[in-house]
Length: 354
Image 1 (cartoon, rainbow, N blue to C red):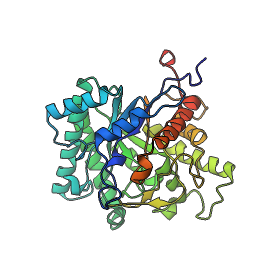
Image 2: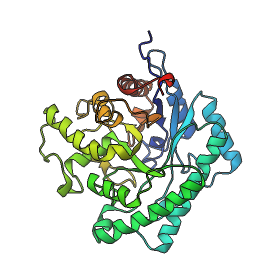
Image 3: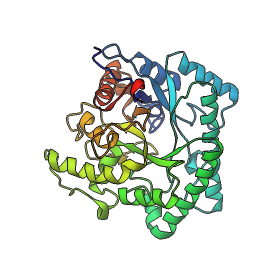
Image 4: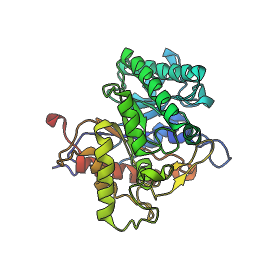
C-alpha cells in the first residue's frame, strides 16, 4: 500500500509569494513565474509531487489584461511541468487598478472591473484545459482603519459590492472566495467575516477562503479585540484550549469555506513592501510555529461529526513574504510538500470515494 494513499485534495503551491512583498530591496527581487513553477515542479517527497499552482493575476507574473495568446503561453508553461492551475487571485486593490469595495461609485466600479477580468481569465484557463477546479480570490480592498471610520455604512457597502461581484461571477460560472485576512476591513475579524458572508447571502457564488496563518490571528482578535476568542497572553502549550478555540472559529466559518490554504504561523503579524501587516507565514517546521498543521487543518477539512469534507478539491500552501534566499532552497519546497502530504494523508480521499 502506498505511503500516501489519498489523491485528493490535490496539492498546490502558490505562485504569488514570488511577487507579494518583493522588489523593494536588492536581496528580495521579484521571482519570475517560470522560476516559481520550476521550484514547485522540482519538489518531491516519497515519490509524490505537487499537483498544481494557484496564481496571482498581476505583473510581472500574469497581467490582469493578458491576451488570449499570453494565457495560452501560461497554460503551456504550467502543463509542461505536469501541473494544473487552481485558484486565481484578482487584483482588486487601488494600486493595481481596483478600488475599495466600500468606496465611492468610481472605486466600486474599478473593483468590479477587476473581478470581471479575473473571472474571464479563470474561464479561459478552464477552456484551455489547465484549470480543473478553483475559485477567484477577492477581499474588500478596504484598509481596516478606513472601515472603522464608519463600520455600519462600510460593511453595508462592501456587502452590496460583493453582491454585484456575485452577479458577475455567475456570468462566467465562477465562484468567489473572500480571504480572511486581518488587514482588510469587514474581514478583519471572524464575526465581521461571518456577518459579511451572511449579508451577501449567495453561498453558491461567494464563500470563504481560510488560510491557517491568517485565521490563527482571528483567535487573538489582533485588529478586533472585541472578537478575540483567546487572551493576548495565551499559553500555546495548552492544546486543549487551542483546539476548543479553533472549534468555535471553524464552527462559524467552515460552512462558508470553499478554498483552503495550509500554512504555519507563530501568532505574530508581518508585512513587507506595500503589504499591510497580517498573519505571519512561517516555514512548516518553524520552532516558533503555533499550529500542528495536520491536526489543526482537520478543524477546517472535517465536519462537526469528524467526517472528511470533500468541498475543497485542492488545497494550497501559502508562504507569502519568505526571504528569497529561503525560497531558492530546494529543501524549503520539499519540507512544504511534506507538510501538505501530511494534511492529505489525514483528511484526504480518493476519486473513487467522491
